[in-house]
Amino acid sequence: MMLLTIFSVIGVDTWSSATVLGYGLLAGLVVALALSSQRWLLWYLFGGMAYWLAVEAIQYVLANRPMLSALSEWHRYVIAMGISWLPLLGWVLYRALRYEDVSKSVQQQRALEAARYIEHTPVYDDDYQPRFH
Image (tube, rainbow, N blue to C red; front, top):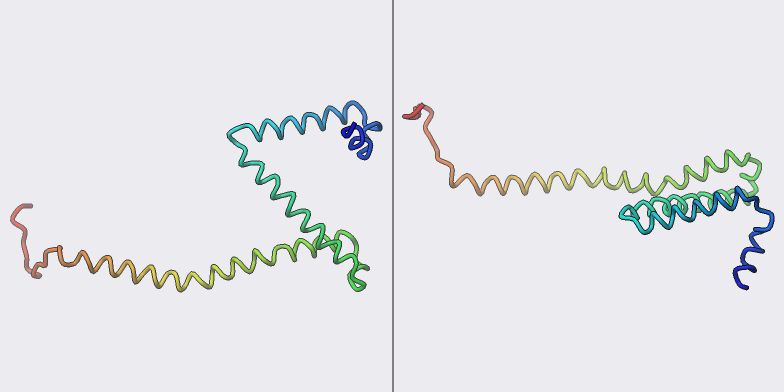
C-alpha cells in the first residue's frame, strides 16, 4: 500500500512502457554496479550529483538577489559554477604557496641523509690512479 502511495506521488500512472523500462534498466545497472568490484564508481556518480545540487543551490540564491535576477538563467549558472570553483582555487593556491616551504624542508632532509653517507665513502687525492682498470 505504501509503494502505491509513493508511486502515485511520482505519477507512475502516466509513464509509458518505455519510460518504465528505461528507469528499470537504470536502477538495475546501479544495483549491479553496487554489487560489483567497481562500486567505487558510484562515489563519482554521487559526488557529481552533490556538486550539481550545490550549483543549483547557488544559482537559486543568485536568482533571488534583486541585482542578479535580471540576468538570464544561463548567466546565473555560469556565475554559480564560478563560485563553486572558488574553494578549489583556494586549495590550489594554498598548495602552491606551501610548496616552497615543503621543498626547502625536503632539501634539508636530503642534505642530512647525504651527510650521513659521507663518512663511509673513501676520500682520494687528485692524482689517485686505481690499480685495476
